[in-house]
Every structure is written in C-alpha cells, then in structure tokens.
Length: 195
Image 1 (cartoon, rainbow, N blue to C red):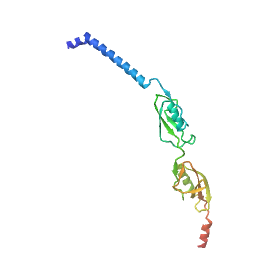
Image 2: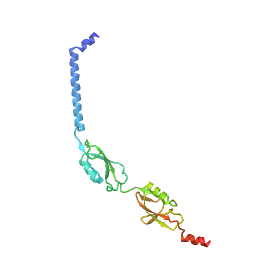
Image 3: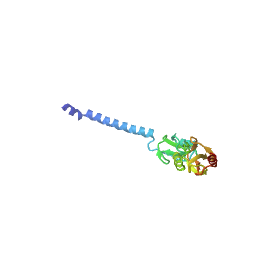
Image 4: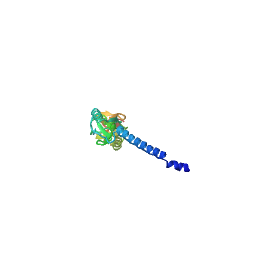
C-alpha cells in the first residue's frame, strides 16, 4: 500500500496525469469542432410557406431552400384550396430547421371521394335524410308524387337523372328525393274499381 501511495505522488505519475488531461481536452475540443462543422451548428433555414402552391411550385421552392420533402397521403378534399395544391406542411412555415431537413407535405386531392348511396327506397323521408347525411350526401329538394305512402321515398334523382342505391356520387353531392304524398295513384284507383 505504501508503494502505491508513493507512486501517486511520484513525478512520473503526475506527468502522465497531466498528459492524459491535455490529450482528453484536445480530443473533446476536436470532437466539438468536427460536430460543429458537420452539423452546421447555429446555421438554420427558414421553412417557406407552401400553402396553396402547386406541387411543381413547391418542389422548386424546396430545392431553392436546400430542404427535402415527402408527400403524405392526400387529405380529404378542401374546396377552399386549389386542386392538387399544398394544404398542410410539417414543420410549419417560418420554423427554423437545419439544411436538408425533410418537410412533410399534404396535398389537396382533385375532388371529394365518392360515396355509395344507401338503400333508402321505401324508407321515410326523415330516416332517408339522416342516412344520406351520415355518408356525406345532402338532400337539396324533396318532390312529391301520387303514391300511397306519405313521405315514403320512391325514387332518387341527381342533377335531374334517376339514380339507384349502390350508385356512387362525390361526397357533399346534393340529391333530390321523390316521395309519396299519401294520395292513391289514378292507376291504383282504376284497378281497385275494376275488381
């Protein structure tokens, strides 16, 4: 034990300890300088505002900013943005990021996705309206024809043409319901009288 304590206070141990400390400090300083040079420490690029730009315009701006991008799946159609334009980006415009940072882009699709018309024939107008609203369709108008079932849906029209359950329409389309008014049709009266 005495030899060990003597060694700790010896001149050769102290020289080696100082050399080890100097080498460690130089290695840390060198590593810090290398990291600063390779990570562009303190150098940032401002993320440009890409909202409402087309994909082609966005690519040009991203390249000029020395950033990268990745297009995420298209979102639900937003009518307040042009078709195939940028509707969202991460990180947000104005954020400070490193060069070559990837910007995640969401593109507005070309239109609303299509939805299937539910089977609303022989369903009350009130229930039919709820079923249509649930899939994203709107009832623009209700017209009545002579049919015995009052407020019962007998036909569906879209832009003046008859359509059937199972057909597909763009979401938010406005359709017309043709319902019965509770009156017996002249055909049914004639048939009933002939019996």
